[in-house]
Image 1: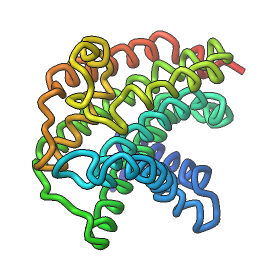
Image 2: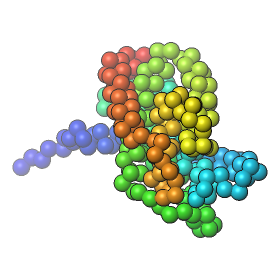
Image 3: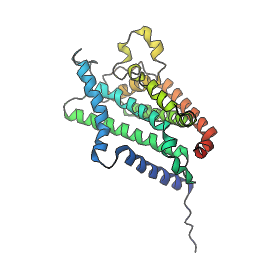
Image 4: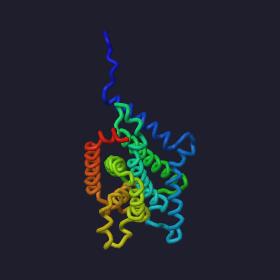
Length: 263
């Protein structure tokens, strides 16, 4: 009796993604343990700076939520978004040699990068909250289902955006310098160190178009029971995330052959 050794498409895809994840981890963190520590050091440094600044203004930046946790709820998702933008723009150029293998496509490179950043984001959020709780800085947790829903939609949004950027970054290489500059103002407009209810209402009509603001507002609502998150819209976030994923897949589908052939 002969047994077929041919692997299914899903097993091949799984092995490809796993290999790319291992490669991305080595590239992201290097051989040194400090590379893995940077996963926690980067958001921690942001939190330390913001807490130091706002501690001079008031004892508790947001009533009922310790300032370090409030800042963590904004910094962690923003860093995930920022890293996905950078990784998406460079996904093709960084993995060009691998596309000679028939099993590997640009989509795999983008997916592995976004998935790794997503895992890092969630791990950072959990570890730092545990560390803060150990230090006595804590607040009651609110809603795990809401937290899961928000971050699933956020993952779809960043995946779609990264797919679109991998096409744009290959067709217009100068965007690799321009887009990161455009991302920086979002740090100040996405609720990283403020809540929308702390902003005068006449500015809400401009800020609420920003999907990141809804991610951060809803994320804090899910994490902290004392946070008032009624300014964040789950319906809007869902619409934008699905639309961005569809747009990214459409861009990739129309250009993936050119991405493989480009040199």
